[in-house]
Length: 288
Image (cartoon, rainbow, N blue to C red; front, top):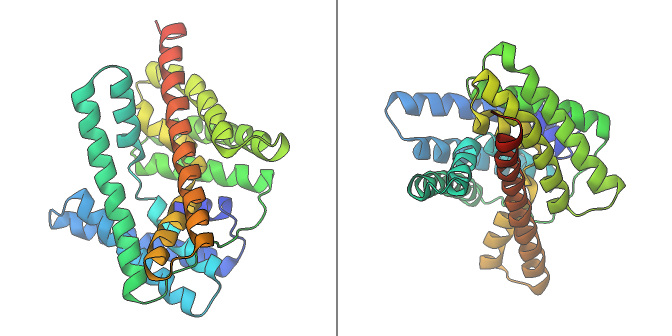
């Protein structure tokens, strides 16, 4: 709940009602996943069910509110479901030439991501309230965003089973990473992919020695530290645009959707590259 709410703040939400709805939806999604797990439903099925609830709720809110509100209600609870450690471990395996296990982990993670997108879209379509793909968000502020990034890092660390005494590392380094990205993106006018790469590079260089010396899983604390950098708004805005294209295709919608999708993919590739390169470099320079 706190992780989804923190991400909502980072993505531009400032309305108390909106944040409360997001927290409730994320909490319900967590309960649904736990109940499905008791019936031995796979993680793919759990993600599908939780995302379906987020999509239905977003559609219901969209019926009586703004498009931006419903987009964030769908987005933020779904972001909690993203299998970041599996994605990062898969990239690290490929970088270490462990091709078989790397491809397996990436395939599994991408399957979960596909289930998340499918659940969201099914929930939105089933209730007939698909949010527009061009929803806007509020202008970010560095103090609020950095604090929210720290909360998100702590929340994801707890979700991944990190002990309380180790929370300081993803919290502090996640805040540093967010400041690096903010300065590059909003002060120096670099694009999102470059800013995300630099932030993840700093994160990897700082976290790798910590992970080795304290015997912590780098993929878990690494993703927790940079989860606030994931371009979730672009991903789900592009997904929304793809569905809209099937119903009412226009040139402007096609261009906007293509731009969102390409920017999201470039940013996520840059994040993965930054973490992997930093992990490999730090492993050679600092870890003996």
